[in-house]
Every structure is written in structure tokens, then in C-alpha cells.
Length: 134
Ligand code: ZN
Image (cartoon, rainbow, N blue to C red):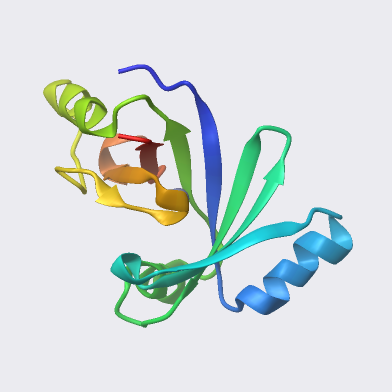
């Protein structure tokens, strides 16, 4: 497995609308997509800066992963996503190297990408997402 680039940075927010305002009005970058990912119980907003995207995540359910994260830690940086060619293969590769997986198989993420998460206990405390087109 070789990560190709940082695909996006995921940020947990309490209120998508208010957070979009900060990125647009203060940082001057425009939201180009809004999408609900029911599987992850989130609404997302996407920004692009250079080659990197910022994914804002608002929980739609207090029991969902972002709801629980905000309850425990408050809003803030949630995960780092690396682009890979083949998510399924990448998950197999890192598991063979002893990394604990959250997702044993790729799931459907926002922007029609396949995604898989690695457990932060195996990654130095950084919730890590691998994403790609297959
Ligand atoms: Zn993500």
C-alpha cells in the first residue's frame, strides 16, 4: 500500500451552516458540495484548497460516530484521509502489517468514493481514512 496524497481532512462540526460561513466568509474558500451520508449518520460540506479537500461533518444522530465524537471531545479535527488506488487491497495490506481496522471491507463514502477507516489506537491517535475509486 502506498498513500498517494492527502485526499481530505475531516472536521466534526456542531452546525454545518455556521461552519460553512466561517470557511466561506473568513477563509474565503467556497463550499462546492453538500451531501448526506446516511451510512455514517452525517451531513457533509466540501471545500477544496489546492489539491486538498476539507470535509465538514455534522451529525444527524447523537448515536452516530460524529455525534459520539463531539459528545466526547467537542468539535474539531476528526480524521485524515489518504488517497489510495485500491481501498480493499490497502486494508488487507495494512492489516497484514498489524494495523487494527475499523472497516474490514470498503464502504461507500461521500463523493462516490470507497472508504475504509483504520483504528486510531494503531495510528498514533489519528483516525485515518483510506479512500479511492475501488
Ligand atoms: Zn472523510
